[in-house]
Image 1 (cartoon, helix red, strand yellow):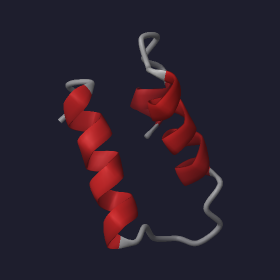
Image 2: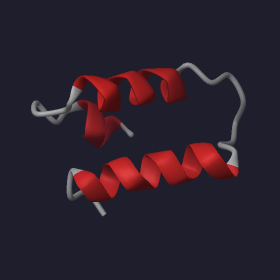
Image 3: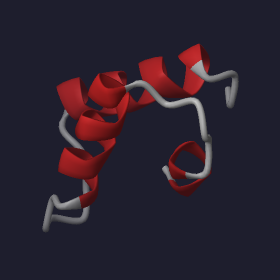
Length: 47
């Protein structure tokens, strides 16, 4: 997730999703949260 935050060309929606995911106070992501993170990583070519 940190690598995504370092990308300068993040769209506003992508940044909003990342900010929301970063504030989760549990030690795991739900299936949907994980899929969103993977989608963003693929979109910004980190995966």
